[in-house]
Length: 194
Image (tube, rainbow, N blue to C red):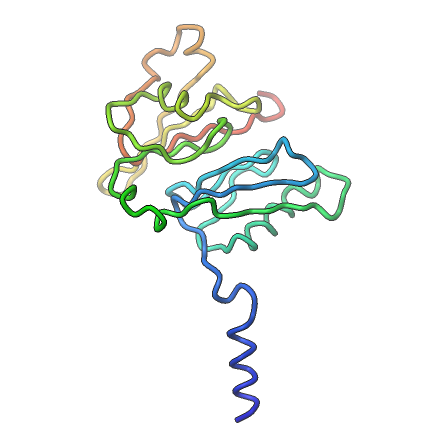
């Protein structure tokens, strides 16, 4: 009987067992001690992923912040000489903290923008207006490969491609589509040959 009680206490007191897991809509504050330029706020998009420079897209849904820290450290480790990479992730705010926001129509902007996150859309909004809401394109953005992902009623996903550089030059004006609630705008990180 004593062993059962001890095992029960160990299970209850184990770190991470009762930790809250991440879900779409969670805003995360991520900081990298060795490289403050990487510090940013990201949102877990509706597909359960985050985008982070030098690490790409990472599945976050169902993970604890600590587990996501470990994955991010592993992905960033090859870019730094310091083996003790210090990455900290904090949940800035969660949809349960502000339930009235769950009822408002939102778009999600992730990747290489100044302020990724979810944005309430109260009026018709175009892709360029959404990018402006997010503070504009970041310095590491792949401007020719911006995507808008839209999930249809049947669960199928439609992907719209947008070339920001062409739009700046006045060429891709029809690519500046009107957004719908639930759309996810993905601004990928620039590759080696972009």
